[in-house]
Image (tube, rainbow, N blue to C red; front, side):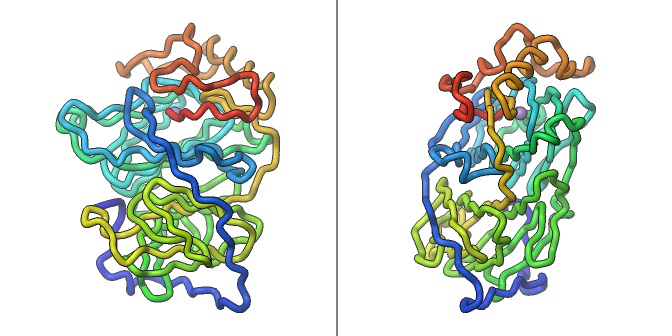
Length: 352
Ligand code: MN
């Protein structure tokens, strides 16, 4: 049972379908397939943004679908302690349990439908791992982690941690009750979600019933992205096919259209979609491993600061792993080997 569910969708506030005459439907610019990889200590992910230009994703940087995977006892994995600077990580669980702890005292446990929103800002260390009882038992693990960039003026903000419980998420439905819309952050048709963001964005997890169409008003100054977490269907006015593990980038317009196919797999009876929109920051991006800055000099400074222990210390009471300050932050387990510090904006393709 993924995330928050509702027995009777018709009890929820409805989002009116924008009149097709007045609104410009956003065309589909591309549909790309996320390659599979491993992250952290070896958990399976799909790199949702692979192959898409950062300018199309702006203000988003990186998206990993974590799982879906059914772990055997002893198999569940997380990340070791590692640093971040210059952006925000948003982690959402559909199924399973993940603990988070950071060097600023932030932390918590997230499970079905909860979100942890960590603003790395000027920098910190953190660890993300399943709790011990989950490691022992195994089980279903499914979620995503999204990286949201910060504008230059806010990259040096002090770190912040927001725990968004599933019960706080704003629940809405479409005009005919054919979709559950979970508004996690930002605004949609006058409703707002609980997440507080520095960069204006809208973040939605929608579950669309087989055969149902979802047409949503979308701010014209936002970009629009849809990533399919489960199931199959179509995107855009021309009903371009899309399925699990694929990302659609929409062009300009006022509405976003998605439809779930009539037939779905029995183990995922609905089409689950992550819908993202944000106001592009339009600044230079220098990204190296866990640091997302504006210039190469700032990235090198982040590496030096991390090596000098200036991004924080692992809390003494915690016995999970260790950060070795002599270790290049990009050589962390699970990191892809394609990081290129000489290429500004080149994407190392790693999360943790
Ligand atoms: Mn991390």
